[in-house]
Length: 377
Image 1: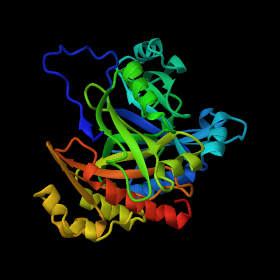
Image 2: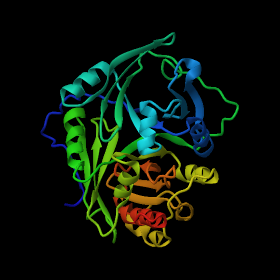
Image 3: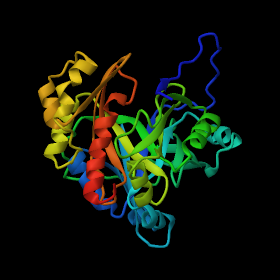
């Protein structure tokens, strides 16, 4: 099977979206040391201090630091005691994404709709209040230990959520141009991609808008399969990867081994100027995968005219791909922790709606070079 874009039939009446989503509210990471992680993301990625919850606010088990850049919000949470779910998550997985929080108009209805369709409840609708108003939160489980939270904040004017206080610091580095979450990619186990595709279709009303098999995503040594799931308005996209048979261990297999299960592989962060953003990130110490010079020898003959000069793209290692809607520019970081698990993609879309199929071979060869250095290929 080749990659296919799935288009709705024009003679079919659109079905009302039972789960309207309005984008990513925040991404929450469970990490070994949230205070240090917050400093790293501020220094390296240009986030700003926003909010805090911990012992000083009545939270005795863990501390959370909230950082923001434009429409991009990260929560970094660490356990203060060793006998709780946060500590256990880190023991099993290392640093990783726990919550993908989604913006909704009605969190109670989102929970009702998804659990009635087979979703496993993580949190029944709960109303959190403080003098700034109220937030309704609910949630369901998805692959591995990852959770989707539904966040309704239309009646809230506070800094982040009830239970958090404003976090002000003298150290606030300038931003790097990151704008919002473009998509989040999940890695699942052998033969688990299609069951999770069905979950997103049945439970959350998503559509499979793009599929790739091992003919599309393979190198001499390894392969994987992937399907891109999107909600109705396209604000939330979750590609799902599973391993495929190859001569050696694929990057998905490496992730599953070191993460000890399924989870979020990478978060794609959008920018309006990828050259400026990646230059700033590199200057602050963020490391990216290296792309061979041979990739750029014929890239323009493949993708056609682009607005940018090729030289700075090559110097930075930025990949280019085109679809029927336009083109995109993308680059992938190395893992952000010592375990070869979670990493980031930086992406600028110039009309393109796809995910860089033409770059897969170069990208995965770069990933394999890193795997070989770690002794995991």
